[in-house]
Image 1 (cartoon, rainbow, N blue to C red):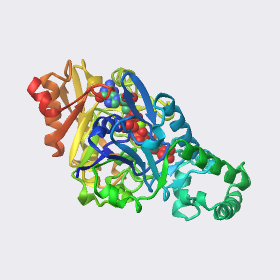
Image 2 (cartoon, rainbow, N blue to C red):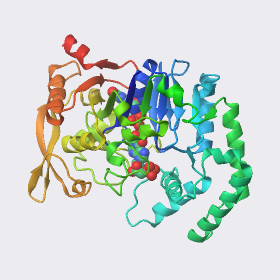
Image 3 (cartoon, protein in one colour):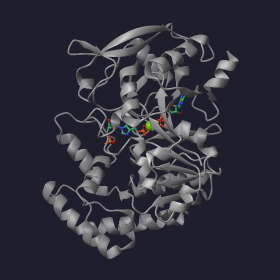
Length: 417
Ligand code: GDP
Ligand code: IMO
Ligand code: MG
C-alpha cells in the first residue's frame, strides 16, 4: 500500500495543493494532518480555480476521499462555507470527506485574540488572523475544545464558560461573544456540516481502513514555518513536518516517500527573516508573472532567489526523500538566475544553517546560472541537476503551470529534450 507525504520545503505556497491534487487519483485517502484555515491550497478542476483552506485537495468526484486529521485546528464556519461553495459545483461532495472527532476547534474568540495579540507585539508576525496561534495555544494549555465535545453539550457549555472566564480576565473583557452564543453557533455549524454529508469519525475507528489502503498526506505551510524548526518566532503554530502523519496512526517509517514541494525561486508572506529576498524590477516581475499574492489573505508575497542552504536545512529537519519542483515556468525568459549556495555567518561560509537563528544573521552567497526560454530547454535541466547535486535529493516531477495536468515526471522531460 502506497503512503506518501507531501510537505512544503520552503515558507509555504510552493504549490502543495496542485501537487496533491495531481497525485490524488492514485490514492484512496488524502489526509490533511495539521494547520487550519491559514493554509490556502489552489487547485484547478478543468479551467476552474478553487482554493481549499481546510479541505484536502481531493479530485471532486474522483476515487480518493479526504480526511481532516486530529492535528488540525478547524474553523467550523470556514469549513461549512468551503463545503457549501464546492457543493454548488459538485453536489454531494460533502460525503467525500470525513473528519476526526479529536481535531481541535477554532473558536470565534481565537480570531479576536489573534488580532489583539498581533496588535500588542513589538514585532508583529504577520499572521493570517485565522485564530491559529490562539487555538493551538489553548490546545497546549488544555483549555481548548475538540470536535468530540460538540456531541456532549453540557460538557461543552461548562468548558466554554470556564475558558471564557480565563480569557476575559486575560483580555480585560475585550472578547465579544458570550459562552452561550458560542455554544449555539458551534452546534448549528456541527449540524450544518453533518447535513452536508461529512462523516464525523476517528482515526481509531478508521485504523483498519487506513492501514489497508493507500494514503496521501497533505502538509500545510512549509518546513521553515514549523514552530519547532522554522524561523522562530516568525512561524505558524501547527506542525509543518511529515511526522504529523502520526495523527492517523502512521509512523514516518511507513512512508514510501516524503516529497518536498519546492518553488523554483522563494517566496514568503508575513514577517521574518528571508536571506535571499530581493526587491528589484526582476523580482517584482516574478511576483506579477507568478501571481504571488496570498491565497488566504491576498497579501503580496515577498520574493527572492532559490535558497539552497535553507533547502538543505529543510531536508535534514524533515527527512525529505524527493522534490517536486513548481513554477519554473515563471522564470522563463530570464537571462540569468541567481541561486544562493551558502550562508556567510560570523565571517564563515556555511552550507547549511545549524539553528533557526542563523537565518536572522546570514548573508547569502550567490552563484549565477544561465536562464532558460522554456522548461523544455536544456538550461532548465542543468538548473535541476545543480539543485540535486547541491542538496542530494532527487527531483521526480516538474510542474510547469497552475493547471492539474501541467505536470510531468523528470524522466519524461529528459526524453523530450
Ligand atoms: P500551496 O499553499 O502550497 O498549495 O500553494 P498556493 O496555492 O498558495 O500557491 C501556489 C500558486 O501557484 C497557486 O496560484 C497555483 O495555482 C500556482 N501554481 C502551482 N504550480 C504552478 C506552476 O508550476 N506554475 C505556475 N505558473 N503556477 C503554479
Ligand atoms: P500554505 O499551506 C504561507 C504564515 C503567515 C505568517 C505566519 C503565521 O498555503 O502554504 P498564522 O496565521 O499561521 O499564525 O501565521 O505563517 N503562513 C503561511 N504562509 N503559506 C501558508 O500556508 C501559511 N500559513 C501561515 O503569513 O507569516
Ligand atoms: Mg498557500
